[in-house]
Image (cartoon, rainbow, N blue to C red; front, side, top):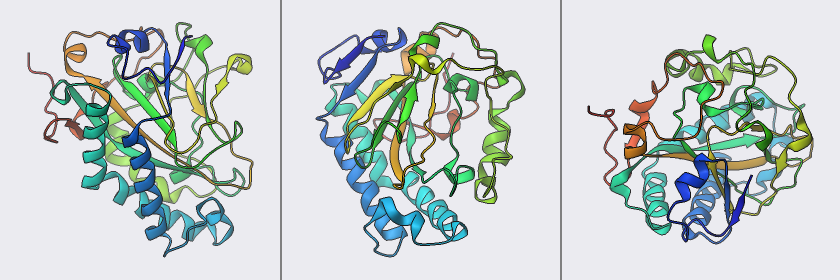
Length: 288
């Protein structure tokens, strides 16, 4: 796997590199910092002015934490501010927003594993986003809201980029997730009872990469990479922001990373939730 440092703006063929398994780490993008600053503001509002965000899970019972995080996630994801910042990100890295669609950013909240690891703070097992109905040309971003350590971050396992993993994606429906399961997150307090696409065997973790970044230092990588949540056993709640981009021409012509093992039956069922980056109109699908 190739790792590019602060080169997303300089590499015109970055999509081809990402589709081949490369990862980009950019530490100096203003829009990424602004996304994290807006996340911090949103967390403070959601928790009645409390600014010690990493310690929030120590201040209240889990039921209250889940209720507040549920509202926080919805308000952040659906705000106009995050859409404006995604458009700004596309401009900042030198792209034409007319060529891209995006999924709105998600604010992830991962407290101590024993406090909560299900529902609104589900600790994702190793997976590819294609197992969840993502397309081969999906480009993922991920950034910590606050400085994190390797035992708080997200892992990527590049050894499996072109190596098949037996998994349950053929039995998982994105449409059912969107319409039925996603909204049940707040009901999962002690264990995750919603079905997810997961590996059927053991994953060799010896080649995991755990990048511990600072506020707004953004990773960009293929959604086809095997990745997942590192269980957080620290005393600090981890906050992160992620969003996804797709290049319309790559989507139209089915260009992207190799599909080595995904069998999700309704890939693209979530397209109705995507927006055109230039005017925020809803994506209506590829016109043939």
